[in-house]
Image 1: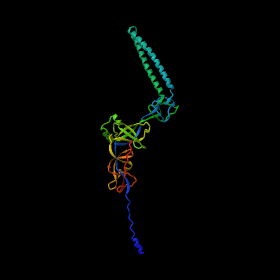
Image 2 (image 1 turned 180 degrees about the vertical axis):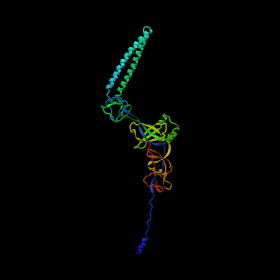
Image 3 (image 1 turned 60 degrees about the vertical axis):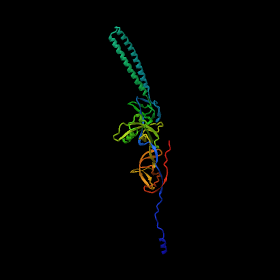
Image 4 (image 1 turned 90 degrees about the vertical axis):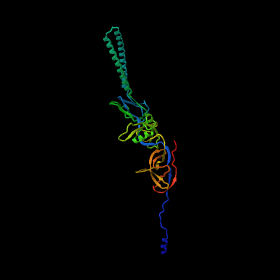
Length: 372
């Protein structure tokens, strides 16, 4: 028993052995020359949206398009029975021809009375009567010409055509239905999709920054159209749609402190539809500047703001507060402040980089996006 106790006393004590430092990948920030941008959100809007209405009363005889079809300007879409209106045109033409014949007769009589008055053969009263009749018939010709124009316009209104190139919505009436009986009847709507507007709001400070960086003055309309804009849909990477500034409101909204801004974009393939929510990138200036960029995925955020994990010279992880900027192609995020070109940024996101912990840094390189 004594021997057993002696052997037990000779066993080494159990001690905690700390695990080796975690290995993390680090990289120096990438330096790139970029145009500074402001990122905003906006909505797409159709340049033209028009309700197609029946402006005359009648029975609908034809619908000459398919719901959702693209229509060219002047293309026929609806047809109202023209029988009554065609007859009224002929009636107006006949009344105009009669008025012209009476005018021709009255002018001949006036000319005769004028000649006789100069020869002292006819009385002044006869001349005055001939002149009055001539003038009355001339006015009647003008009146009948106007009646013919109205009748012709009503006949033209029996055919509803596309006022511009656009997509026509579903029909709201059926063939055989009486339209225009108690006023204009809405038949459908046509929407122009190419080009398309994008509207968004800039804060007063952002607007002043843009003006100070772009020539430091109010831009003319021609210069305004040269300011480029880029947008991207919610399911798209980056800003693939290119356009330009089109309109800036002349006043600041006192309630929100913002300025309404609008851009115009080509939309030949009709990818953009009115009402889409889009991301907008607006250049703060037209000249490039050198910035530091890191992968967007390594930028973390908490209640205090955004931060990066950085490894110092002693290989200890530090939480570094930074101010981020725009998102670039390749999911790279610009860092406006809080980071230097010599800082080793942790680019692994496996949770091994803990602030205050010592690590084994493995040097890597941030890949720049391929040039397009």
